[in-house]
Amino acid sequence: MSTEEKFWIGFGDIHEDLSLLGEIPNLSAADGVIISGDITNRGDTRRASELLDAVFRINPNICAQIGNMDRPEITSYLDEKGWNIHASGKLLAEDIGIMGVGYSTPTPFMTPSEVSDDKLAQWLNEGYEQVKHLPKLILVAHDPPFGSKAAQLPSGENLGNRSVLEFIQRVQPDICLTGHIHEAESEDFIGRTKILNPGMLCMGGYVLIRLQKDKLEANLKYI
Image (tube, rainbow, N blue to C red; front, side, top):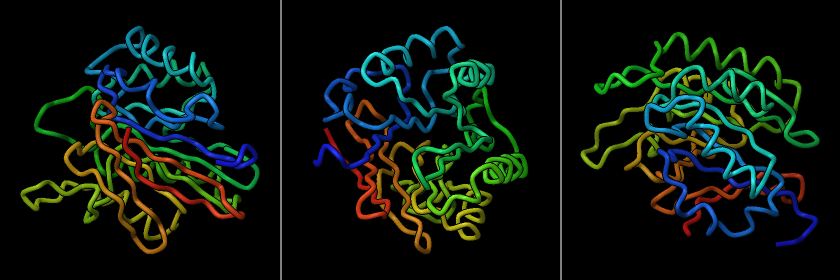
């Protein structure tokens, strides 16, 4: 990989297991680390900070959001650190925006951070308002879009989110990094948007995002 090439490493569904973190190639050299959610297992800010400190020691340039398994107060901690992308958008690099939506719609497990589909749609719009002027966009959605491979169980049932799908269809971000459905590791497309679900970090999946010849490229990788 060229030393001049900008690249980012994305993953999620950490669930308090960072055993493979140090094995991700070039993690310390990346321009940033993008975390899609589920840092903890129903954990609080103290537990999230312990886990994120381990990431920070390898690469301090973090963009992160909570998933449904994280307590809502962790978002305030991420805001204080300048890392939060949930319901928010920011400049990632020249001409590249990043925005996120964490939480999830209700699950059978009554996890700490569940909201309605309408609320996720509201947060998506709030984040987009901050980056819509940028020509390139990375969407980080903990809940995967409905109908995509990133949301499909081995049984064939699709557990994806319709608000995320509708947002992607309308806005067509370059890349959508997602997670939540551990069994749905995949690459897929909705229109021109590439959808990537690397599964749980402890299973070795991550996403490599590169800026190549003024175009964002993303690929699913395994340790």
